Length: 49
Image (cartoon, rainbow, N blue to C red):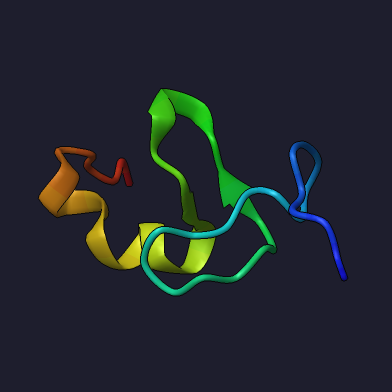
């Protein structure tokens, strides 16, 4: 009888792996930081060194 979350950290999950930790929400990405590092270049981001 648990209710569906409507707001808060438990409501947002990574689109790729489903975790609720470290979600990047800027630019409506919706990925955790681990998945973002793997697919960042495919999304058009590039690293500065």
